[in-house]
Length: 435
Ligand SMILES: [Zn+2]
Image (cartoon, helix red, strand yellow):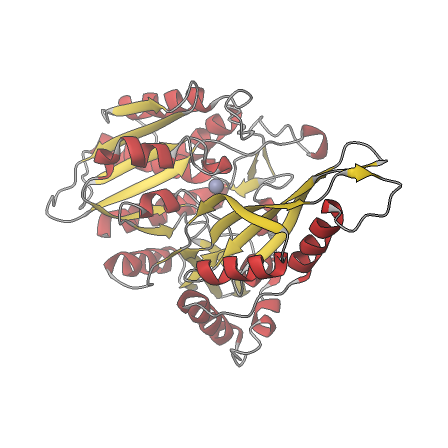
């Protein structure tokens, strides 16, 4: 007899972790996405689901497949994941990050929560449904993308631009960084469903001045001008802006924590949330962090120009405001150019799909309360949203109360609880059969 999805999910996740799909940000030094794509395609082909692999550049492989639903009149649903991972420095880890070791009821390794866990859950589930001849109610597009960790250019964005036909008719999508639990009490857990994402505004600042000898008096030094601009930006606190999603989250969280919600001081509620506060706290306002500096080539030569990089993260609806503020802070003599821009996302926390998520969570965990939240980073949802698809982060995981989940993302000793994976499969099974 074939294994059930719950039995198979751990092996699938483990196999995927063992395929090192480190994305360095450069195609020349990234590897393994092709091998992972072939693994996924083979697992789908084995149960009769025809998968297609696309390469945007050599080795940058994504996999797509379609599963026909029983009600073709309803909009399709996209289940997607990414196959790449960020680099791991093995010397910092307690285990080999690509060994897929099982220890203390956890599966360890780079990608365990970001996001080979969800890749494996999706795979395990569609394999079981195919074996049993079960059809989902809606048409499903499966997508396992390359390159999410470097901005999705060679993965989701490439596929959306070059093969949008795979997503024809799809109205909604689910994927990573949502659906995980944050414990409030023994019998109350918030499950954070991602319904919004901040946008990305990476900027290059350039100051130009007069090049010259370092021993002369010099009024127009590019490094001085740039440093002043960088300090003003780095020290700036953007105003508090409560988007619908963040307000709703804070109201729900305050209610669960039995504290008064004060919209003028949202930090009070956030501070009580534990480690997850780092993510939520970053969604109260725009942020701009200086991250790189480049200027000069010799100690006694004043260079003619100096540049800096700023990692800007922008709330929905705040794009213009953000850039105007940065230009003002940069001041005269410093140009501001975007080097990468990706839109913020926000959808409402309502409708049949959201109800199905909340119901499926509650069925498996009677203490579950589904709440919407905004992710401070970005996901492949940004690419799919360009096709008008509503995107949600829903990769269900019930987590131990004391686990610092946020620190596992791109962190050392990334790991996922085995029973959390099995829980996720059960929730997704119920969710998919009713959505
Ligand atoms: Zn991810």
